[in-house]
Length: 246
Ligand code: ADE
Image 1 (cartoon, helix red, strand yellow):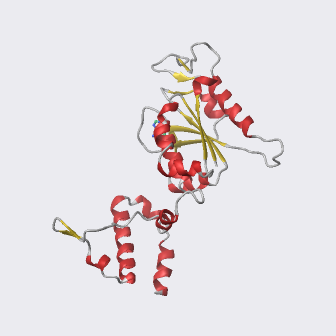
Image 2 (cartoon, rainbow, N blue to C red):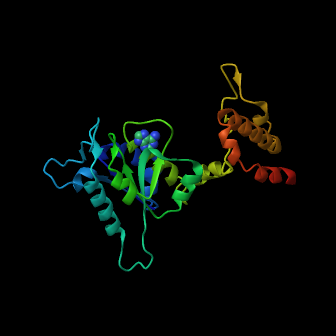
Image 3 (cartoon, helix red, strand yellow):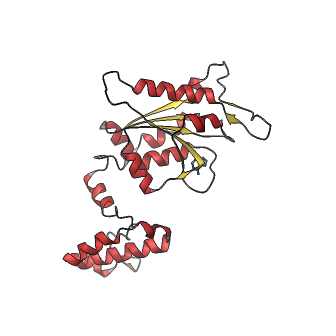
């Protein structure tokens, strides 16, 4: 997968993209991320990306020209004449007005070949960008951040881990057990008793059936406690049938 990120703060991305699993994914060629400085797509000597809103009012608005130019250049560079299938990337604007990112959306995005992310700022982006360039608007939650850079990183991280082979064997086995939508069950490791706090006996029992049962119960409990909303998406059936076979 290829991800292009358009931002006025390109330096914000290096610490996140050059660490851990995302770094490894890029190293293996599974993910190609390119960060573009929006100012490189301006044509005036001050490299101005924003202006006052028509009609007055506070704040500044991103001008349409540099954003259109950046996206068009990225799209053009991705189109190889030999390739018969047209590369139609998703052009995603990170904005609090967007559709809320959830695991279903993340899964869909992880199947795309090319994403272009636009990090919004200031009072917003010229509406012509939203209407004529952007294909999707995404919010990472019902709160307002100072910029779209952190949301872009959240999106990249959540999508990258679902690209085949990005997660190592151990990591993916773990995540797959929760593909049904439940939150994680509590985990314990050595020592069995720490400052008089004991790990649950069942986990030390060696009885895999009981351990599995306990984990399912705990995952349900945690999920219910943390988010009633998520329960709608749990595919309880899968676990039910697994159980019956035992
Ligand atoms: N920009 C500012 N706040 C945001 C949010 N919650 N999601 C996406 N982009 C944003």
